[in-house]
Image 1 (cartoon, rainbow over the protein chains, first blue to last red):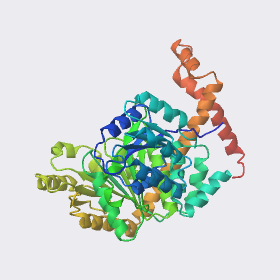
Image 2: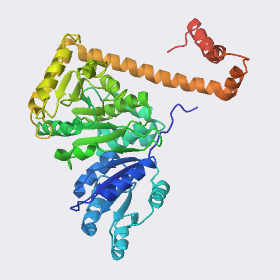
Image 3: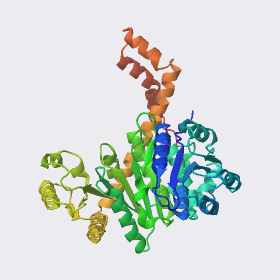
Image 4: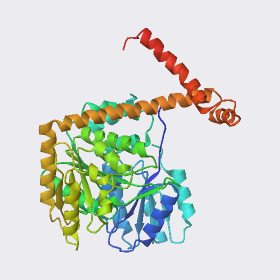
Length: 138
Length: 328
């Protein structure tokens, strides 16, 4: 008989990177994740890539959700991926993106390491289902 | 210990941040083997100073913790922060938002902030927090700050895990009756009237000092410090108060006494957990709790008889042990 019982919870970091000052979407997703039973760490507005890396590594999150509306995703997201790689945290972190991402940028971002991109109007249940199915096994 | 865990311990002792983060996750999840992991870390601990910060929501705990972490970092010390937030009793989900206030130290890996949810269980929180402190300590972190909302069981847990407990109070946060109530006033070694630039701060300090008068807490008289966490005002007074308490703990022998009490509690908690599981297994072997309850409801038996029956084999086994002690 095992005397240890797994009490795993899916942990997500919801982060706002760069200069855009609108975090309503981030709040909404944080709350939806919380209601789905996830543990959500919200890092607040105006994070630099290295701040997000620090938080993702220290909190050992399964999922990193980046909300970005400013259009700077092509410069900022690869920096975050590189930072995660530096600490050996890229391989087992699911990276999802939300916000305004033009179609032409989607493929390059996915090649850069983003696992999924959820544009405006995505039903919350779709995002939650994706996280449940793809959260890395630890 | 399995070899991945042995690697994890080695990497943690080697100073790899990722290994520390993963060890804490395994501790929080109580993943299979986590006990061996904590056991392997134990011999490398004993150097970290642990400070607990509690107080009502909105009292400014996270902002103060941020400033404290910054000053320790300026002294060249490494800092670990465990920020505990409540979890939903319905879904188990949680939003852990204390990290937002750690603005002075973002991007600095040697301020290692870890958010923990209470995960709905009261006793378990202290076990997980205590074990996470062990991981921080073994990693070589100098100061560990445990931040928790003082609203129930959590603040009692913090007393068990921290060497020094600071209680944050907001000006005008209630009348004197609030301060007469049991709990919060009994656990603080240092009281911090934060937002001391607000009207009514003087009155709160006065009320506190009246309430604390005559509090018998060994030889330590709790200190009251006024701070404005947002500006850092009063921070050096607070650091002085912490040092004074630390010195008291070390010179009076109270530190050692605290550690001994903590270990004794820990052993008892683990034993209760283990014994509980063994007994759960015994209930299952007897057809499960529902069947036992059916018989109690039908008045065929009663709760006491059922409990006696379940514990009997264990008691007999222990009696045999006593008669013929097995080598230990």
